[in-house]
Image (cartoon, rainbow, N blue to C red; front, side):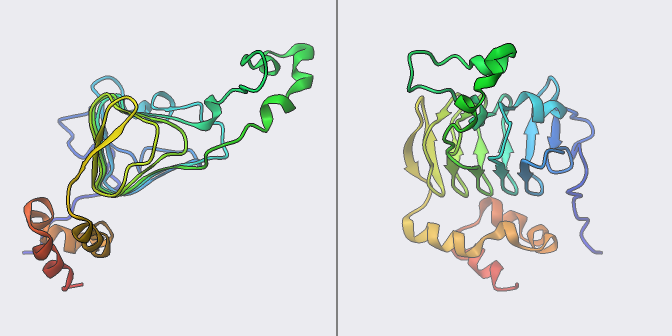
Length: 214
């Protein structure tokens, strides 16, 4: 009997748990890219992710989230639209208030950005994680609950705190290189399905052996 493959287009992967949604079939903004099977968990309204969890997203910077990521309740992304001028006496954005003030829109239109915010594949963001503009969170990283991510986190790093700091790496540098070369998240779905136990609990050696069947 052929294995039953999960459906990456199904909004609620667990129908009995409406608090869990897959983000790829949910998001509509062209400024947000999400990979397959990345999910968000929220008991209130997970379907409001684009408006409640992606903040000040006026573009052109994008939010890019990889495949197989787990986003805990309240994980939020502050985008570059939250930026204010800091080179004058006031940080207040007068032009957005209208009237004659709008004639000075050039004062806020050219604020420097930090580029896209990028979350790699197989990343776990804990409860109430806050990700600031332009950071890059590497593949396989784990971010502790309540952290404020103000700087990049390396592949397979475990980080936490406000501001976030690297606590340790999950694997040695050599094994991280091997895991990145394996890139199991890019495997066909049937191969992932066949090797779920190895992906979840196996060794790097065992994962390499599984990759040989590609």
